[in-house]
Image (cartoon, rainbow, N blue to C red; front, side, top):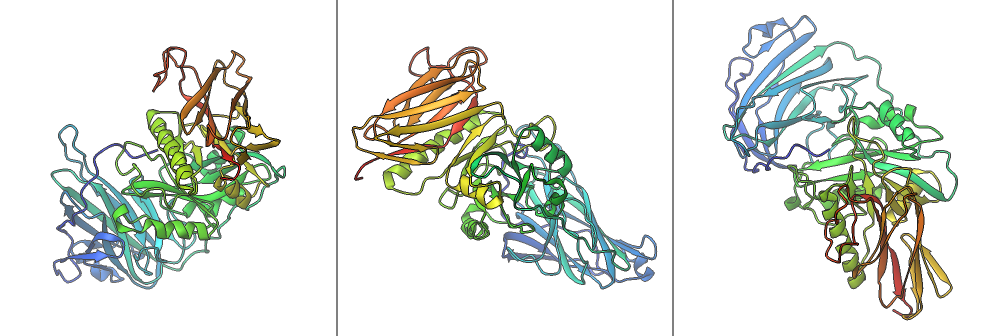
Length: 542
């Protein structure tokens, strides 16, 4: 899920030394520049000269007639730039480029971050923010990768190895007090390109049930970023969880989009997306056009997030801050919510991070009502990477016009959804009064004193607790029987509640009171089993 927890490094540009020498024995110089992608360090370029004549050059060698290798070493001080670009001058006739890298991990005092460094690559089209040159990213999950015309290491985009200046990108997101020594090994293989890669994108429609409730997990990872499940395993897990749709959200890359077609079917809609991993928080781009990539090389101070949020929405997608209270390095959300379409308030098994996210979201609902502003719906996702993380724990139950990407994104955007820990949990939530009714994400308008009956029917939560929460806080609580099925009705008016939402909680594992219990020993709740988006209650004439 999130990265291991360490303090974030400062972004002051570093001054690395490089141990490589260019052809002819000329020492490499350090070039520090302000790149379009933010604070970055760009090194002097590495050149290749095809043929055995270069085998004697320090830092270069040939591994057979068809290959040429160069090795670069360097050092980054604490406070390194967010990204270190190593230009590589690729000659014509290259069939494959292969990169290996490593860095040292010196011992550090307890509580002090050790070295951690990501890697990726851009091709000859450049490294400009949101440019065309992106060819892949694997973060810190891999120590090597290869790209050729017809295939590439997961996380990277297959395609032609065109001549020009490519850039290997290092992302030193944690640097020890002693600094970081790194080594990058670049190998070019010469020859004719093989057959071109043909992407197999998933269809944007599955066989649905028309206008209905559909279940789906919107945050899933595979071996194409830092997951350990293959796409086949993730699709199988989604089906086993009883899901109708899933969203592929590998970190900082669109490389998996081109393989999902073979795993979709009439019974499973597979939606393409990305988790954008910045230094100031992670966010989900859901419903991206297949093959589209969203850049991550900026911080909240750079005022770039809004630009990319608009790009996602132009393509019909959704912008979702992910696990906003995740305690690990670079995971906590710092960009605000003005450009968000939804917020992920429940990420994987229920924790106190999720409690904080729900509390913040609930406060945002109150602010939206007070200021007459757009409200932001909640969603929940598993963020599953590997065993034993459970796909579909939790997932979203969305009311959509059909099982299509556009319809599902529309249902989520409108807040016509609730969150379930598993398919065993069933729920309906309505408000009715003055001859009208409304459901989740809707608005019921009635006179100020007209009685409004709020009703929740639930199954699948034995001995659970139902909570009704309004802009005043929790105003009703009721226990479910051992069977886990029951109906709860509570009466209010539009003058007393601006909105009402429902939670269904498991009992506390130790039988004790839940977090925040200040109203007596009968108020006990444990982990979340289900959470709804609100129903808004509006006074007539207001």
